[in-house]
Length: 118
Image (cartoon, rainbow, N blue to C red; front, side):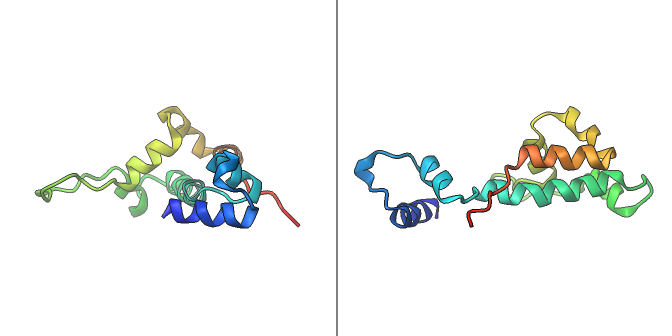
């Protein structure tokens, strides 16, 4: 999927393969965010909302719940919690979510915003 996207971006930007421009350079030139960054911001916003809830709230209880039962054969699917851990990269950042303003600033730093090209 990324290969097709990068190829279309190169075509639109007029960058040929022989020009030796990297895909990251072409993506930045076109002002397009990576899909990973586009998905990270809403996920972290929701995580901050869940963490700020009271302990008795169902949404908060589900955050640390372990599901009983057998797992299917094969590699386990990545859970939402593991995605959050990868997004934050350090578990200490999790405690910043209690302060809403600080958390929003942190999300902006972790997910670069797209600049207006008009």
